[in-house]
Image (cartoon, rainbow, N blue to C red; front, top):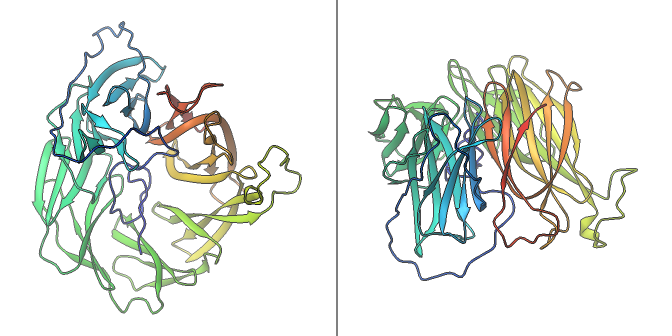
Length: 446
């Protein structure tokens, strides 16, 4: 069993999903039409003047939306404009000035499974869109330079992932890559099994899963690397619940979770090793991250009722609203072979913790998530807060923060050397969910 997580922030997991992760919350729907083939057109809009004096208006957006934090501190945000039927893109400087805007994917329409993603590639960014264009379902990407001038769009596939330097997708046995140096294509070596893709910040791998045997093929800039078996069919005895890839200096490795929560690791050139510690039966695994020495496993547990002393008077009267969600972190020390568990706290009573993402800035590892309100409606937005934890070196050293929001959607923009960022759609007081909204950049940790 595998699960998909954000390829930009999370350095672990087998990713076999669309590039653009769906945003939290929803969007006002438009009527549907019969699907038909339609070309995707791309129209760049004027860029910023050389002295940066020209002011651009921040576009109002709906979901789906994507964003990326650049090394310079600028943020690229892209989202659907439902009334204008296009994806609008803006480059926002660290101080908040809009440096450039562009309109792409003309005649784009909202659909319940639409997705938009933004991925830095060298000095450029790639914007991906999965959704309806003139009634026909499309998966398209377009490359934008720093002034948001666009190149011709390409079609990509569902099996895709991204590093900090490129975007990759798998089309049958062909791997496509959009890199800083341009487009590349490679053929996967012949092998039996289901193909997938895995990306961390700096590496891309093709995975081959053949009934208990897991192999990997590195994707190099100008060629495919050799096929190597990572996990053999006799490496583990119990049934598998989940497994995830992570990369160490010596090569790809695997964290494995057995059907009763038992933890094991398989490192390059070593036999499989059991870890002291386990996931509990009630744990819902949500996200995994790793560095050279430690694997970080985030999970949640739902509890009946509210924490002692918490005011529940404003919650709906339904019994199902009286619950609390606890977030836990399991640190797996790869050197000692031991896992330690830390309770990171609970979301506000009746609020659902969701949309988790890991990041690292200034040597600080951050785990963030949204809190969804228990009674969102046309006047109450669904996202009440962004919560994050700065993970300490040991349990007990973690710093907790909760930032209240009135948001109809929120997406992870990633981290650079100094900060992490998220972009959210602000619901003004007294407004409903039928109008496009202004995207706001939230930088953290403090």
